[in-house]
Image: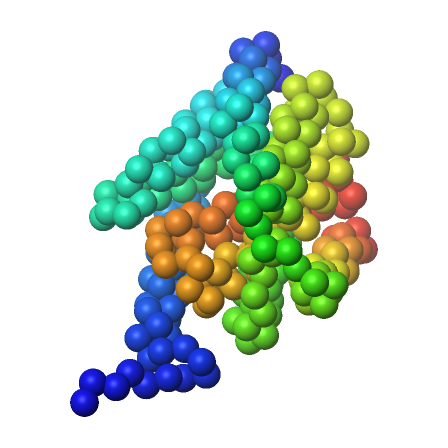
Length: 224
Length: 62
């Protein structure tokens, strides 16, 4: 008799599938984070300028928006994910070099932002995993919020509005926190079965959290 | 920021607006509605993040 076991209202196959997506996501996420740290280090060692950093960031967004969705269901998608995260890391290099050169406590602030980002990510992931709450209702709010914050961030950069830039950083910390809850909940409730898309979503959340936290720390505690 | 950087960023903003603008509307329309309890469940950990960030800023200042 072929009878499927049911665990807490879900089939055993469903639970196993969720665990597989979760495991693959965290494995690919850790590899992409290490890879982008390496490319950021390379950019810093090569003393890459802000312009080259911006070009890499724009290229990574092009890959993320237009190429990745086409390859997300194939093995080639993993290569695209490494392309996106490597370019984002390379673009981050000049930003880190700037903070190290401009602030006497730049190194300390970078490490604080890095540690803080890690704690926030682990804490929110643990909350979503343990509470098993469904955060799918955040989807629309996050989509619109991120688009608005993205536009405001670009406006602040173009017109040199430092106060708006700080507001955008604060918005991004809140939105990316929501994104971590939303994506982790989507994985455990079966709403996200593609670990490539789950990985890139969590990576972008971590990347933005780190940059926003660094900017806030530099603004309020940076020593020139 | 140089002129070409401003133009590149402006172009990216326009691409994002035209590409994601309509999708944002759809996402809001198709997204399930959360109850007050659901929102509280999300705002609680995010409030914790806000307090943690304030703590980090205070620690970095001192």
